[in-house]
Length: 592
Image (cartoon, rainbow, N blue to C red; front, side, top):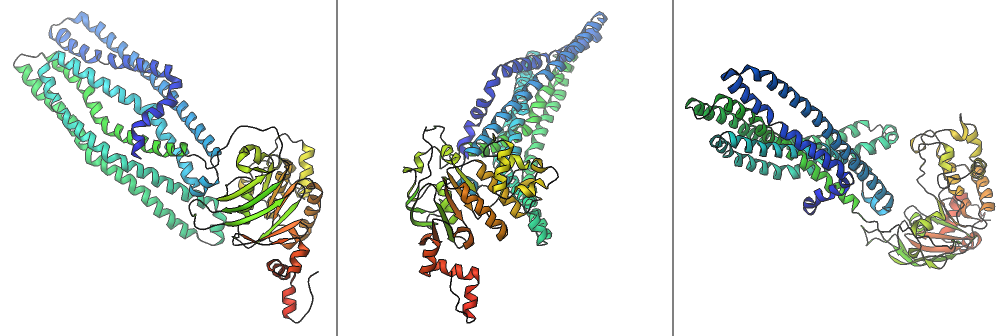
């Protein structure tokens, strides 16, 4: 964490520097505004000594008009530089958020397996706003306070150096408390950001799973869990308040001591004649130029530490590198669909001692269909994920058209592969745009054609707005089977060389599945197709079938070959057709 602190300001400058001219102009206006503030106390002193003391009434109107003019100019200039800094902050926030979103598109499955959605959203919202606040408000306030403090010291020294030295003696104590507050505030604000991320993640998860919560009547449990996270977030903020409570009264107290010193010592100098009343009034007028920076130092330190904590989290995300880099190079050759697994093993990076796949080898030619069967957790989905390079093998090679998949540009490879994933996801958009997601240039008749193949056209046309019906978030309002069929149509719309169907028809009835398979058989004659299924009916017509058990290929062959072998596949076949129960009841019916 600490390695970022010295570079956070350089890092944010890299996003601010495109507005360097605005920053320079705004800073010049701020400097002018800060210098003009000197005139009001000086004019007040002249008003006391010359107009009132020496009865020079002719100076009254010019002095008053000058004071009004100075205040008007300061008001206008302050508005201008505040708006300019705000624009710079908004532009920086826009660029950083844009870069963060682009980074999220670059990152692979491994990153999202280990990071909560709520945590990512917290970085995109709360942390981003802390950075914008720093650029748009904290920066110019720090600059303003420093200028005011220096100007006040210089001008006050010219009025009475003795009184100025008396005030300066107090300031080291203020800086000591400021430094201590800064050191204690930084870890506290980092914990606040972490706690906010955890709270955000919990709420996001609850909202996404609200149907499960209601189905199991677990509202009270979720409320208690929320209370726990909410209390932790409250505690972290109270810790921050405790830091402020510990140091801000001292900072305010020392700022108040300056006024006491000015009135007591200044009053003494006036009484002994070494200082005029007008000079004391002017000197006292400059006191707020010392008081304000000192009083604000605590709040500004809190904001700076909040900025640093947010920078650490955002920069951690931006500096994360995907395990599988996305390259832009685009070879001229197209993928034909040869797929070879050469002694492939795979384990997740966070648990390398638990293999998901072990020594898997097979070869598929274009136009062939491969069925993949196995119990839950046997590695079926992981196997097909290696084809699309969502992960790379731990050992062995995956070859696409006799070329190692690692040598293919990721986007080129995935553009030639369509996947219908087990966890169906639909965007909150129209059905037509969901189907055309992978190929946005499809014509309406082409969209309807793939929907017919997926047996989705009929139920889509029955909807109020047909293909222009907007589905809810994640397809809320559609049945599981309807979502699967739209997802299948989306995959077919890409016209890929390799088609991967991960338990695609599990939520549809047998009759619908049979119709879909009949259409797919015609469409996939020139495509390499992988079908993951639990139903024998989904894979029995495949060119060959792989039976996985605990990450290993235990059996392979056609439907007839595997049934004749009377192994794992045969047992599944008997259970699904009810033959096992018939045999146990005394029947002698064998598999057909």
